[in-house]
Image (cartoon, rainbow, N blue to C red; front, side):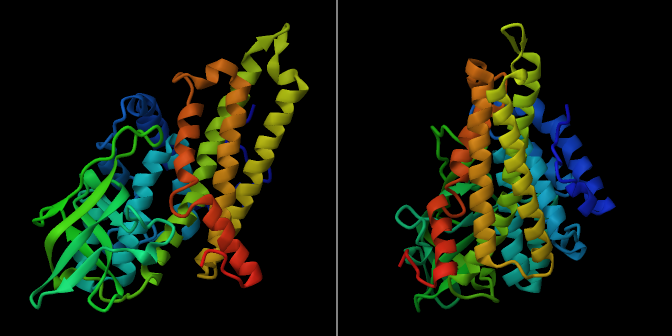
Length: 388
C-alpha cells in the first residue's frame, strides 16, 4: 500500500529543494496538526499556538523575498506547502493562505517600502496575524458593489462600513481592507487592531471550518493614517490579484485534503473484512479507489503545470479559476466517496473524512464560488460575461 499517491511520478519534476520542503512541512503536520485537529474541530476551536509554529517552518509568505522575512521560494514550493497543510486541515491551510496571499502579498506588491519593512517580517514570523477585508454582507461574488467607504479628512482617512466571512479577523492584529474613496475608486489600506471604532466579532455555530476562526470587520468612524493606504494600486484589480494568489494556493491545498481521505479509505478497505475477505477485494470498492487516485493524479498534474506557468508569471486568472474549481470539486467528491468506503464509521471523529468533507463545503464557496469560477471560464472561451 502506497500512501501519498504519485501515480505519474510527479516527484521527478520537483527539485531536491522542493522535496525537502515538502518532507519538512509533512513532518510538522504529522507532529503538530494531526494529533490535535479532530478535537479542535469538535470543540469549534482554532489552535492559535500553531501560528508561531507556522512562522517558524516558513509557511507564511514563502515566496516573499528574504529581505522582508520570507524564504524567497518559488510558486511550486508555495503550492507544495499548501497541499501539506490542507492534508492536516483546510482551516490550517486557510490561516496560511490568508496570511500569505491576502495580507503579505498585497503589502509586498502594492505597499510602500516603509509598509513592507514595518509589517512583512512580523507577519512572516507569526508575530503579527493578518486578515483580508473584501466580502460584505450584501456583496460577495460582486465585490465591486462594496459599500465600505473612506473619506479624506485632511490629516487622516475616516473609514466606515463592514466586512464578513473574514478568516482570522477576531485574532488579527492588522487587516488589509478594501474600500471606496471619495471618487468611488477602490483603495486598499492597512487597519490596525487598536484603532478606535474597529471591532471584529467572531462568527459562531459553523458546521464547516470549525478549527478556523472566522468573524466580521466593523468600522465605525475609524481614523486611519494616510500612510496606511497602499500607494501602488487602485481599483478592483487590486483585491482580485490577491484572490488569484489565494486561489492558486487553494488549487494545491485541496489535493492534500483529497489525499488524506483517499489514504484513509485505502487503508480501511485493506483492513476491514466482510464475507471473509478485505472489502478492497470487491469490485465496487476498487472502482471507488481507482477513480480517486485517477482524479488526484489529474489534479496534481494541473497544479504542477499551473505552478510552472506562475513561476514565469504566465498563469492567467482564468487558468487559476479552472484549477481552483476543478481541484476543490475533486477533493469534495473524494471525501464523499471515501466516507462511503468506511460506511457508518466514516461519520465518526475517529477518522478525518467528515471533517474534510465539511471543510471543503466552505472551500468550494470561498475565494470565488464554484459557479462563478465556471462563468469565468465561460467568459474566457466565449468572450461573453454571463455575470454582468
